[in-house]
Length: 121
Image 1: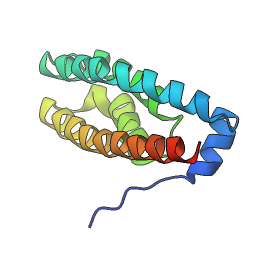
Image 2: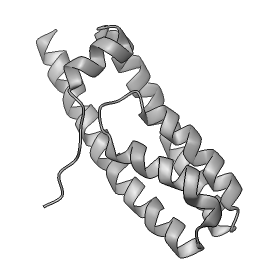
Image 3: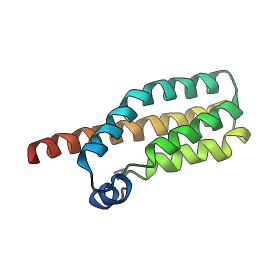
C-alpha cells in the first residue's frame, strides 16, 4: 500500500498561510487553476526532448506545491528539476507519471480540506 507522506496540515496552515484560512483557499484556487497548464508544458517539454526546459518547469511546479502539506510531489518535482537533464525520455515520462498521480492525490486532499473548512465556518 502506498502511503502519502505529509506534513501536519495545521502546522502548514500556521506557517505558510499565517493561520489565515481565506488565504489558504485563495492560494489553493490559484494553484488549481495554474497546475494544468504547468503540467501540459512539462509533458510537452518531455515529448520534445527538451530536458533543460523540463527541469525549469519542474522547478516552478515544485515551488507551487511546496506551500502545501504533501511531501511526495515536491520530492518528485525536485528529482525532475535536478536530475532531468541527464535522464532519458522514458525516465522523465516515468517521473512525470508519478508526479501526476501524486498531484491528483494532493488535489483531492485539498478539496476535502476546503469542504471541511467551509463546514466549520
